[in-house]
Amino acid sequence: METLSGNLLADIPVRSKDEVVTTLLSRAEGRIERIVSTGQVSPADFWYDQAWAEWVIVMSGGATLQFADTDELYRMGRGDYAFIAPHRLHRVAWTDPNVPTVWLAIHFGGGPAVG
Image (tube, rainbow, N blue to C red):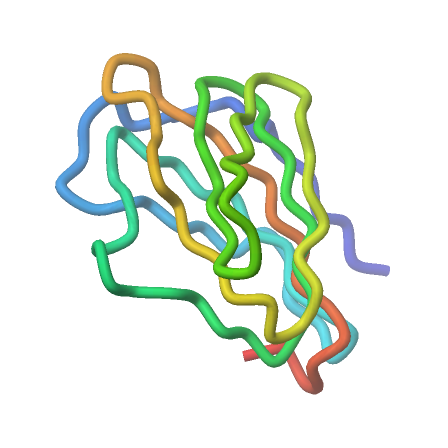
């Protein structure tokens, strides 16, 4: 039987030009990722349009999500989570440039390994 284990908060990059995405588990039913942001944001005119659902939680740091269907910004800190329905246009408007933002992202409902 397969055993997967580790520490989500170990080996966090303090600075990186790009977000660091690590796939922790990938199955036909979905994918679990650790994402580390160090000030990165989505490009100004870019919106994610995913065919699958996503559930994210901020484990450390801070971030702001923006959705195309509302003017409200969703500020997230440690322990805050959000469900993003398939095809709900969204972007990352801000991540803390001083403290790494560690996200746990669960992607599901979009086919084999959901993308």
